[in-house]
Image 1: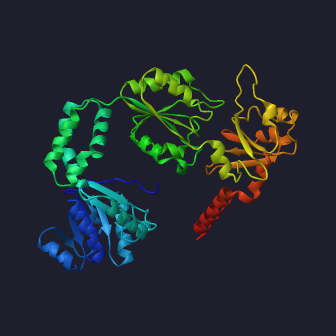
Image 2 (image 1 turned 45 degrees about the vertical axis):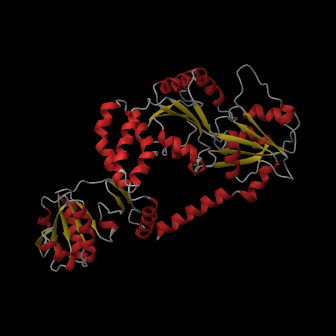
Image 3 (image 1 turned 180 degrees about the vertical axis):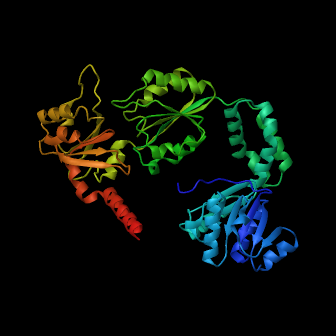
Length: 470
C-alpha cells in the first residue's frame, strides 16, 4: 500500500493554495466543500477565484510564496505553472512537517487527492497512487452509476437513530446485525422512495425483533489464490463476528475477512503448536452460543480431508444452525495451476484422492488399488510419509518410472513444482515444504505443455523488471 487512505476533517482548518489558475481552483473548490479556511497566494486569479474572493469564501494573502507563509498551515497545495515555485512549496512544507500536494507531480506529494464519489455523509475515494489518474476517474464513473443517490439520506437517518438504538440494543454485535438487516431490507427501499418518516418507523420496528441467534458458516477457503473464493464465501467472511481459521488459509484470503472480526487461529501444522480438535469444536460452540456469527475457515474444501463433518456433528448436537460453503480442494486447484489435468482420455480414466497423514495405529490404505495404472493418484499431507508411499506403490505394481509431481503452495505466487519419477519421490520430498500435494500418474507429463501459471508469473516478473529499468 503506497498511501494510507484517510479522511481528514478540514472544517475551519487553515489550508494554503499556491496558484490562481484552473488547476488550483479545482483543488480549492474541494477544500471549500470540506469547510476549510482557504488562503491563496497568486499574482493573478481566474474568474472563479475572483468570484470566491468577492464573496469572502477565500482569503488572498499575497502574490509570491515565501516559506513563512506555511506558518500555522494544516496542509498546502501547489498548482502553479512554474516548477521552481512548486518545488519550493514542496521543500518548505516538508521541512516544517506540513502535508503538501503538488498537482500533477506525484514525486512531490506527501498526500494525494483521490477521485471522489460524493453521497455525503457517504464518501468513496478512489486512488491509483498517482500512477493512473485517468483509470481512477473511469472507476469513479462506474461507481457513480452503481451507487444510488439516496445513500446519503440513509446514512443521515441512520446516524440520527444510533443513540436511540444504543439505549435499546446493548450488544455491539447485535447492533451490527440490526444495521445489516436494516440496510438490506425495507428501510433502504422506503428512503429511496422518499418515505423517510416510514423509514424511521421501520427502524423502530426492527429494534423490537428477537435478538439474533448464533450461527456458524463452514467455509472452504480454497488452496490459496483469493480469486478462487466463491462469492458466498466472501459475503459471509465480511459478515462474521468471529473467524476460526487454519494455517492452510493464505494471507491473501485472510485479508478479505471483515476488519473488526475476532480472529482465532486453530490450525494444525507439522512442527508448530496445534490446537486439539476437541478444543476447536468447543470454541465454535462457545462463540455461537454467545449469539455471534461464526465463520470456520478451512483451506481447500471443508469436506475433503478437512474434518468439517466432525465439526458440524458437534454443532448439530448443540442445536446450533449452520451452513456449508464448499471451496476448491487442493487436488483440483493445485493441479490446474501446475498444468496437470486430473483425468485425460489417453492417460487416466480415474482420479483418486487419499491422505498421507495416516492414523497412528497403522496403515489401512488399499495400496493394490492405489497402485493401479491408467489413473491419477493425488496424496494430501504426504511429505512426511513419502518414503513409505514410494515403497508401497512400487511393491504393489506401480512402475518406478511413473511420473510424479510435488506441488508446494499450489495456486499461490510462491507455488513450486518438483517433478520426477516414482523412484525419486522420497528424495524430492526432502526439497519441498508444507503445504504440498503429491501427484502420481502419466498426466504429470502434460504439465510441460499445459503449465500456464508458471509462464504467466514469469511474464509478469519480466514486465515488472522492464518497468523498474525504465
